[in-house]
Length: 82
Image 1 (cartoon, rainbow, N blue to C red):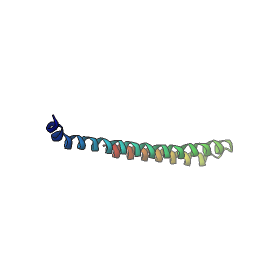
Image 2: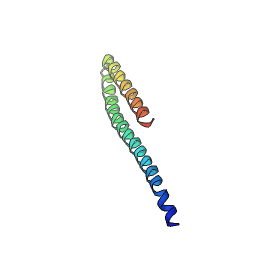
Image 3: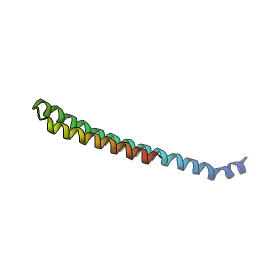
Image 4: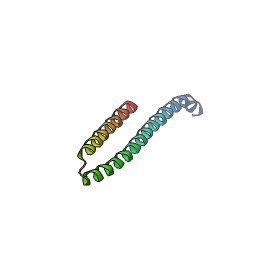
């Protein structure tokens, strides 16, 4: 019994290491996404203020910026997960 466990140990360590690396990548992607979403929420506050002031050109620029950020988040997430 002891010998069987000794033979399987390197394989188990490799599986555990791979699992841990994937979890770390997923966690870092989530952290990046959460940070970006906070930035997007801040930009939405700017949009609301500018819409009240009827400064629609600024609203358009901010919306474009939000779309660029969200696209970047998606590309980063796809690269890190694959």
